[in-house]
Length: 298
Length: 298
Image 1 (spheres, each protein chain N blue to C red):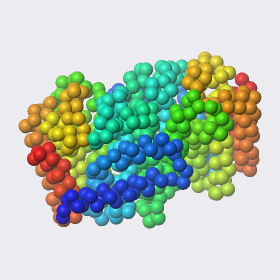
Image 2 (cartoon, one colour):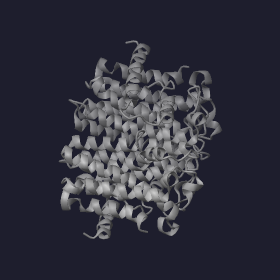
Image 3 (cartoon, rainbow over the protein chains, first blue to last red):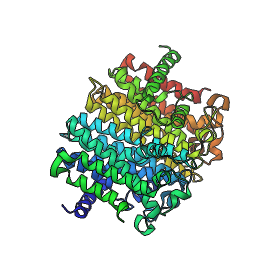
Image 4 (cartoon, rainbow over the protein chains, first blue to last red):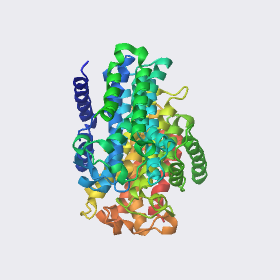
């Protein structure tokens, strides 16, 4: 398979579904709709929804069945970026090469655009689960997975830990605590959602879950590395921000060589977890190799 | 029935369920858990979850079945207060007689506590729906109701309209637009959730919905009146804030006499909608009379 063609096709599919998902009988206030769209269509790579679809594929879930949940995960990812960029949080003015939401719409509107995206995500999942022929129990389980991955013991918890850790001594234990929650939890949930919707057997579920956990963590380690070594033109973010903000990162905790070793280790583990799946897991394999490879072989 | 005894009993039931709902196998970071609890147990009257339970009662839903959804609605109401009080929004330092979340925990943590409560609310509903014997379709419908009431065409949309309307000329059309979204949408959703979980027939559903809509709007009209005429010791908020913030309110749009007339009209409509239900709807009747009565006969 050709990864970049695969990713481009999936991205198109997801973008179309996202546009449909935001359409409603009643309309939200115009500025709110604009602010939600501004961040949702700001050039995101759609890695999380693509992972949900690809994981579902491994265990035979249809794209139609996974798509609303994939969209919801991207909406939640987007809300988290909007809130993360706020002055009271990381105070970032640039994201994916564009001014951040609060710079364009003001702080109050940015908070509300995030709240709107988070809430609409759950509406989209509930509506997806209510479609004809959908397994309602699987839909409720998938909603639970997303909420757990995004909530107080997942992403929001990670954000809090991240916020509290600024200026603290970066140890390996601390950085793993933060990264497993802040970034890995939602990526892992994306993979688990595909597995749940495809009615994965327990052994399959455990393997996909191990892949999701390893990839999720690897993703943030790679991000940490790129924040030091990447170029703004490529990442769309100002590099060196982590050091400015005194963030707890992998390179800060274990050095650049250690960070790269850890990324490689996690990639190996992610690929090992997929071994029994054969060709159906090829997208998941190539995505992992690509995501981590960006940081290891720039 | 004795309303204050009924409300006190329900409040106890809901508080216990809320405490259970926040307990998880894994623990969220301590500050986050503290911030979420601080606002959730700050002495709220629990009107919305009580309405969900009372509406369910009318059509025969069990308390056990409605309770997780009732809790979720209160969590969402609480998150909305936290975000609403932020400096970038209404910038309030006092709520229910206590310092607001961002005053105690800082702005970043307050945003995240709100995000956490909103996300956990959906986890609680999904878990409720997955309990043995629960109708999964009804659970998904109830989640959809809550998300729609709280989201971009509901409460969040109303907040945006409210934010944008500051310093605009308060017309009756504008104030109805804002209030139906900002306050009425979630109250209406609470009533609809009870109806959905009790498998209300269409005619029953329509009547309960009309009650929820009228009461929801009456609730905010009463709040507007109390902001002018109430005493801080009684309302737990600084009075006169609406005028300070140049909010679009009912008294500002149609005068105090007009506002009181409208509140009475809405109360009459809410009670009329309940007429065919007999004694099972007595709690809904008394709640409406009490909520509006506070403002009409202080």
